[in-house]
Length: 301
Image (tube, rainbow, N blue to C red):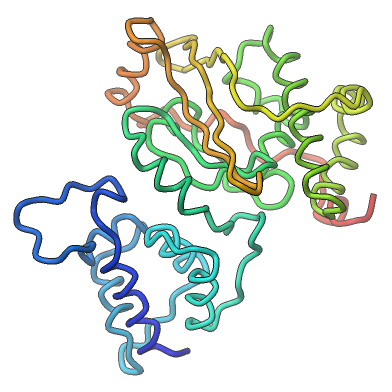
């Protein structure tokens, strides 16, 4: 592990980021143009002392950042794909998959935009509807995404295999959402080409869900870009919102955000979300689906 180079790289990446780029105030007493160490630590979910040790990396302090820590730093420092890979090389850690999986590198442009959406629920997801990062309002509105790996990391997969995944949406809207998920997944599958992950997911869903199989066989396709949604919130009841999608250039990631017309009931409810917070609301997106082994998903369809 090249500790001196790792520390120097972190310092230079921190120095180049302006506070406004990550939604932080500049402040009258700021002595450096870039971010402070404690600000990077906060953005990455680390302690300030630990991040300081990383920057001061030496053979004496023995810091050994994990893959998860490096992925969090890459997001906090807005590293592009080449910089992210370089960070992992310096730490002598295996580079996580670039296109999917729980350690997916969030594209800096989408992350930067999400940081500016401080007054509205927002999250970045993959084209398989795996949540990569989200703000506090999204957590309050939609519940915490379960920390699954494999197929269950995809909300589309959970939608068709776990009844609890549908609890935040009125039952009368379920058929519509099912159609939208399937048409969007078909577009993602075509865009990915002969991608083993999406091919196996489709095969498993066809076996496990008659609803999915019937919809898949229609061959309908449409990329989801905007939708009007009703969301069942445990404290506020049904909230009607508009959901917008901004796709990355390659279509592999998208930024979702929720809003409502000024003066509407939905707008008032969004304001209340920041007051309610996530305390005691828990997660209603469901637990791990039963009956699917790692071997089943890993097998060829």
